[in-house]
Image (tube, rainbow, N blue to C red):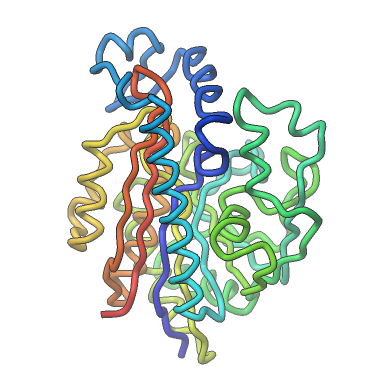
Length: 338
């Protein structure tokens, strides 16, 4: 039988891919134009948010931002080292699609890709030119320098589909990724970043891409449903008849586009304590905008708990980029067998 040997969770926000001196402040330009900034269950304009919160000017000095950047890069390096030590034969990567692949034609709460491979494709100049301020340079950190065909463990993926169906779930199954926003069918950034920055561009460990609809109404799963799916996922992996070492990955989060340290710290504590009740109880009105990607982590936590894994390392860096406290809280954890 397959063994879940460990895994990791990582944010994948733009501020991880470009140094503060380059594009962090440019991302703040987009924040100032955003009249629907979600924070603690409601939306704000930028000015309303600034009035409602403390002044975060002390967080956006060059020195503070550079120090946070350096600690996030060290954390990513650590994840890469630990991933190599855990020696995966396959990686089950749980992330969310920003309508890069799946659009309004079908928005399944959970989807499993079970083709033999996925294409990892660089952006062209036209796509980069269409991106909002601060994103184009960062997006280059999600893609390789040439087209790479990445292997998928299709047998494991099909087994996951079959067994989660038997557990009462109805996952969508994709054997061919749609052309998507960039009209190339390439694997989205939530998966691409894991290879480019953590595993290394040339790494060819087979993956199983699992999509969670964290963003798009009306089908985001509840926190409790996400956890239950994770438990079913973990059990499915462990019942796979081949003797392989499987790693779990949660890609995305933590709170953004408004940093909510209170939520992040409570969430990380719940992961460390295997606090199933808390993870199930997070209300939908907190799982909005980029913070919605916590659903990916909740699912992986369910799978990790089913496999008896524990958190072995945590790094948390709230990466602010404006005085109103917008930005991306960066989280990095590793799961390992006790």
